[in-house]
Image 1: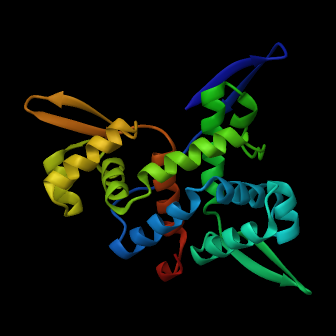
Image 2 (image 1 turned 180 degrees about the horizontal axis):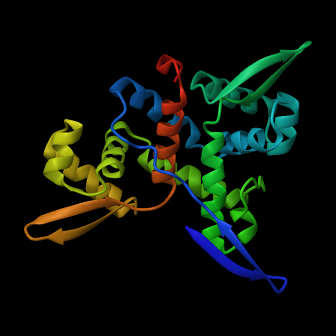
Length: 235
């Protein structure tokens, strides 16, 4: 995707890419872990904590608490949940415990969230590769609420299948994810109502496709991390 615009009378050409890493379906146990992680991220405070760690790097609880402007006890509880979900890891420096993002996930997710924000608002600073500008709180709230809508095993399995296959009808999706067709149809309706999938008629079939957005980005990042691990049990 290429974005061209004028800034200070100078033409700049920013190339923004997000390669699709979904070449198949994740093992069921891995997808369940991924869903658990996304569920923990579907919370405004936890998302802000992760964003802060992505920007600042390794940080102690007191620094994180000041940055997110929340009570330290609540921040500590959130950090514990994020650590349990392997979204952050800890390291000891003397008597202090420091937290940092676990590997490149969910750091890679924030790369795409910032670019998504840039596209939505025409704030082209967020489209520059390598930028780590903080996101507005209302946008992180929006993203957290969106994640909450699709952070469910059956829904993420459908979305994953649609990235893998690009498009499919209800019957093929149900067969592909080994789910009851009625249940699949119900989940597809919810995903469509929430804007995560679109549909079109092709003869007597309704064909579904995943739309661009945080749901597609999240699954691509999950697959990217899984593909990068030598020991898949570390997911």
